[in-house]
Length: 341
Image (tube, rainbow, N blue to C red):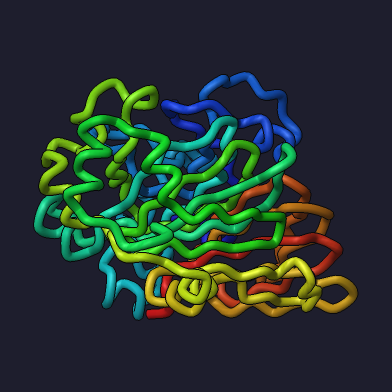
């Protein structure tokens, strides 16, 4: 592998966004919040913002872009089995996302839709791990309460009827430890005061129904393909309480040393678990991974004997060639990984 086989600690990477937020990210990292529109921290990103050449890409401490380092040695970074399936793509984008205001109602394309309309191997299925909340009613929105006529949704979009769009969605009160899996096509929004670790496929395809007051033009809402085409990717089916239970998990009460965080349907797209070693060391199998330390202190040890201190707010990228690792201490760590190859 070119460069290091060891975990790499990464600095913040906050490309400018259209909405407010970022205070929770700054608090986690122990930094002053200097950005009014820094609500997303793209961790270990090999993905650019839609239509941009470099914005969004993570840079390693030695100055190289992570994307170029992975392309130079995909087997070292990702492992042979992963490369056989996904090539030199990490197949993963991790973000810290702090909603300082409610996000607009939007949705994302599936793999097949993205291949046809964006010439991309990946769509944008995603999942949220709620890391913190503020305000009296921290809420996310997912899926229509009842099935909708696509023509009606089209009218809402043409009229920019935000109350109708938001009112048609299920509202879900959340607290730290809750997770929500968002399949491609599902309309959704994140409410003000919700801070999440977000896993997603490595694209920036957001089809935004509620673009007015958020985006500069409707073109940025449909990404240049027109809303008539974009709406073909929208899931207009009703999601009742039973269906919502298949995408929402409540993990706060589980104090196990390793907690699988996401709904079963997420596994073809990404994996995430909470690690709490406590008094016993946790062995971590070789894998490309992104680590986010939510609390406490600990250490990550490699098979070579190297030790990497961990503290609240640290974010690390771990190459597959680092081998088996050992996590110790009183830290709470979210480990994000691509799908099992």
